[in-house]
Length: 386
Image 1 (cartoon, rainbow, N blue to C red):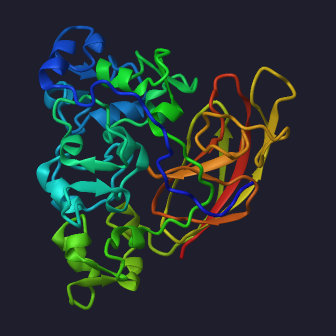
Image 2: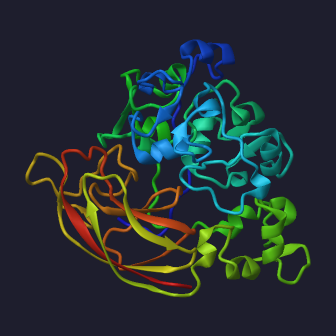
Image 3: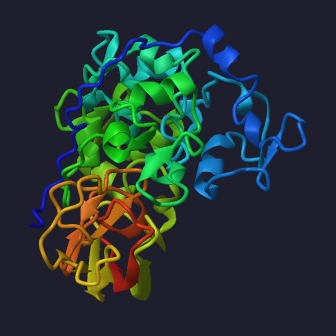
């Protein structure tokens, strides 16, 4: 059941849309400011105490990291515009794309055809899907810039699903009303994972970060294929020839990020308790692409009020699936993982996997509705650095 490849696809989902792009005037009419219902004292600022949602979702909207939401962070249709040229780190779950600007689009558009295809996109697939308004598996310049569109592209489904019931309600949704209605394909007033994220059919992955950046597939990275600062490129270009080879990229720890400071020390003896009612449990461990992650996993969880609906780390004992779980085609209740903002992968009862990308490691249970779950998995985790 648990194959060793992660299919990084967007899933096929045809959504009827009567209005693909919302005008700025329409968005402004919907609300004077984003999250206005949370502004209890009407001072035009949303504090953490006023925020009605998860901490991760708050952080995703707190663009300047000052612990409150104000200014452009609350302006309908505004987009986060950081300077990608100075971003010497890989995008975190709160930075799906560093900059929704003309220059960022041009930088990603390697073949200069005015659209971004999946092999030109180096971030998470959920954001790609959210921005791809016409569902043609490519982002045009208008979709990318998102002017006047309040599609909550900085928030992922799991962070908005505050009560872990497998749906995002209108009160949990952090975008505009028309954008919610557009995603709500069956018009039932709530968003399923499939409506927002699409189908993710992956188990363990052979995703290769170097190959993903190597747009022309010539086995090396030119400066035009690099999406961080000149300084970070030059630091990795050890022979000074203006080209990054795979060994130069690998030795440096891949793309820029805090992982560069990990060194070669292994991680041993960490015990993680995976609560079946939480979407993701933070292991506190950052892995580097190519690291061997070792698991000794045990435990059983109950997946519903039915006492016989049980699952071990390999998944449901009855071999049932959960149609709106993070990974379709993998047994309900199976132990799964996620690294950073990349797509989840199946772990199950495997003893060792190889980290496909670098980032923070999270563990979870492959189920859609979590609030009626009971029990936990206990995972003894160690990491052998590559």
